[in-house]
Image (cartoon, rainbow over all chains, first blue to last red; front, side):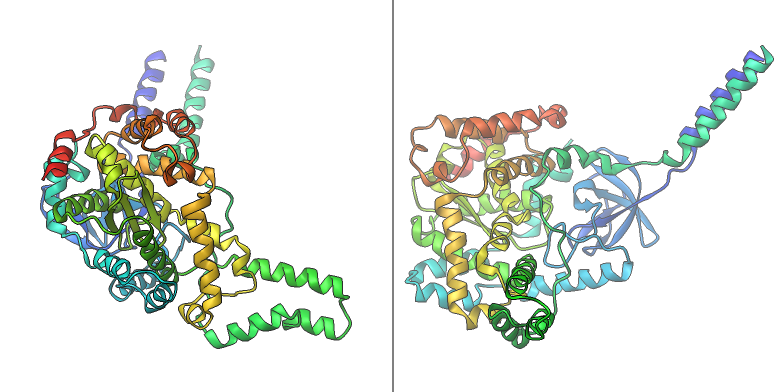
Length: 167
Length: 333
């Protein structure tokens, strides 16, 4: 009888470890997030996901989550994902449930990205009226024009063994 | 013996069935510790952004200020509420209206205007394209893993020897050449920039503004409202300027920016203790004494102590890189 008990305990523990785990839904924080073939920064890029895309987290390896996104399985650097559904205007605000809501927000954010560029005329007019020097205003415009190149950033991270390239 | 064994089996089965539903991977716990340790000050739940209809807002604003708008106004004119009650009700409505979150477009207009102020007050832009590229790379790397990576961040170096770092709403981050000269390695720079990114990501200046009296009675702050009412824009800018350049943010918001800053630097892969080390160094420096940075921030000792208190999450990251050589090369180029 004791053997039977031990066998059952063993069996239950075995079942517990091998049973499929319930996937949790996370969301992509920023557009162009890479879904990769392996849990390595240099592995093949299977797709680039839009901001707000829901993904089912299936597992973890190092700094990567194994996910399923739109039927495709792959790996994403874990800090590119959030448990909170991203909201309009950026940031970790409202949690939206419906997928439709996510897509709307993602579209709105992309629109923001391309349209809100440069110093607002309201800000510029106000600054000039308050005696801010044209050089200071130009410095803000120059600051806004400066864009970090994605490839340069990737190379920078790889050389420093940072981000997804870290151990 | 048999009965005892059957009980054990039943107990195990029961326990297994009870445990099973919660036996799933819960990755949410990974960040629970930092969320717990960085519990932000109480803030009302953000409401959906209202439709931007400028004309009615202005009318509403005027009527509310006169104490005669909507149902309260109707109740007042019909004699349902006495003067005191309707005044109280109006105050309540105005306070609620002040809690409407400021949209990104408006946030950027406020931040951009303040960015011009920063250049004007603190020596203008420091002209070194290579160093600027390096600062932008480190800054963008930490911003990409922040809690708000989906907006554009801009990083600039200020041409002043005083150790300074600022963030204005909408994604503008500044670090002075004086501060850069005090930094020892890239991990410290990442910590400093991440602290500023955290102020933007957590909308600290905006939170302060949203709670202020300047926005009372305004249902939604739009660019058109700001443009048509220069007096209002003046007030907003004065208020945030006063907070950022004179009074400083609430101490708890600074502590929160330290914790989130360290977290963002850690997520990027930098040694997370570097920010604390730099805060200590800054506190001990004579250069910092009497500077705007020291007058607008809590003491280094307090900041370091609070960071240390919540550092258990980072024990495994003690060997993460500090990248001292890369920083030195960038500074010498």
